[in-house]
Image (tube, one colour):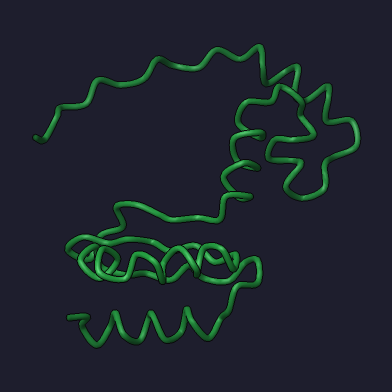
Length: 115
């Protein structure tokens, strides 16, 4: 059963509608399991669903088009499809992209597993 805070969040999210930039609807994992078909219909309309467990975000159901766009952006070496592409691109960003590509990143940290 959702808490009052979760009900307020869900109501506000539902009122925002499926327009891009609208807040994602948050739903507890048990409710998502019980209302999975409804969650899919919401994603089909263009709105993301954030699934929570114990009040923390753990997963998301997003529209397939959004996932495709994210995968293309991540896989691309074209600077126009990266972060700059999200805001329409920058003139001359190719040079900036080449400079940033040469910068060495630090290796990923080894984090302790909690399970």
